[in-house]
Length: 95
Image (cartoon, rainbow, N blue to C red):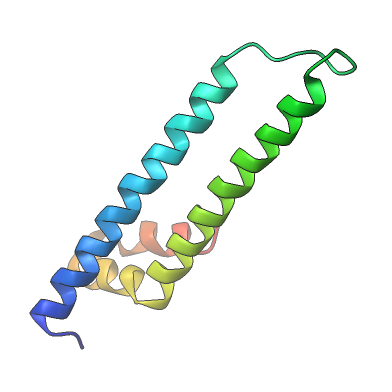
C-alpha cells in the first residue's frame, strides 16, 4: 500500500505521461494530415522513414505507460473503487 504522498507523486507522474502521449498523438496526427508522396515518388522514402519514427515513438510511449499502470495495480484499484465497472475494467485488461 502506498502512502498518500507516494500516491500523489505517482498520479502526477501518470498525468505528465498522459500529456506527453497527447503531444505525441497530436504530432502523429499532424504528420498524417499532411499530403504524402506516393510510393516511388521523390520524398516517399524520407516520408516513410519519418512516419515509422513517429509510430515507434507512439508505440514505445503507450507500451511503457500501460505496462507501468498494470504493474502498479491501477486496474485492481479501479475495480476496487468502482465495483460496478469492474467487469469493464477486466475486459479492457484482457483485450
